Length: 229
Image (cartoon, rainbow, N blue to C red; front, top):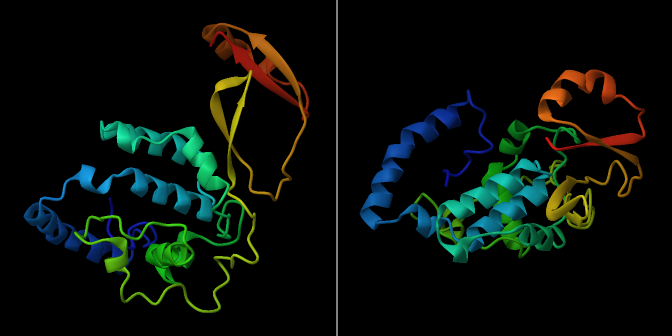
């Protein structure tokens, strides 16, 4: 739902200005071809987005936002679930050495081929459906026809043979504390398991806001869960 390079071009760059200028041009193409958001926001397109999140080490917010976006289509066939995130996390490795856990930023990605370069990498490795429609009026494969791919010798996107983590960093959890499901961001750098003590505080929201400074301090190995709030 955005033009090529949109996510990697810095806000104050020449490329971002050119993108803004081209937006109206592509809007005319979409109108002429009668391409609507539901034609682009398919189940496969959302799965592509999840693959990109896993490859780049994206935020847990992506889970909430992508699920909500899929629901906005009002077409149950496009809806994604927590199970879709886990399924894709199991097969797409974490490859991007990006902050906050890594070394580089998105501007560095722009300099080695941008978001299209990463998409081409995923397509070439069978982890992204290049036949999905985009807001250019063309598919990803058509958009990337002449793209050279990621710059040879770049060190930001790891090869599949040497991933930061062999599977995705977002892991879906189920249990008595989150019977409907929860999400954790496990990059692999902090270890893949941890053990803590749990103290459950049953407070009203008003009491919680008044007393949290005193009540919520235990020690570095204790987590707190607040009930009734």
